[in-house]
Amino acid sequence: MPLLVFANITAKPENAVDLKSGLQELVTEVRTEPACQFYELYQSAEHPERFIMHELWDDEAGLQAHNEMPHMKAFGAKAKDWFAKPVELTKVTV
Image (cartoon, rainbow, N blue to C red):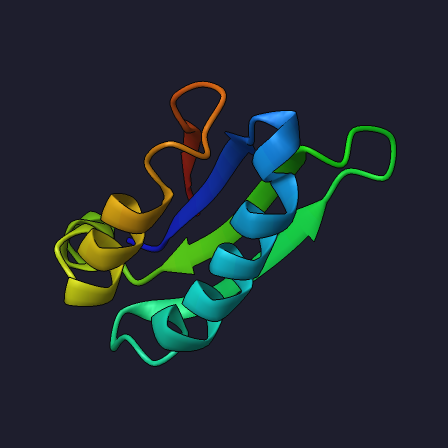
């Protein structure tokens, strides 16, 4: 069953530009994953340190595989100090 995910991401204000750049690079790689149907990044106009990643996966297994991809692990290591708080996920089955 397809899985829709909204990831709410908040950068430390001083790291918003770096986080946005890193997320934009990640989008290109993630879109090549077999289970990825849609992966789009948005930035808040009112709060530039806030981002939303809008994702659509074939299923929960596809999302789990995504989390284990080398590019996700590399991004996590590079960006770990850029986050103001943990990423908040909202999952919806469609």
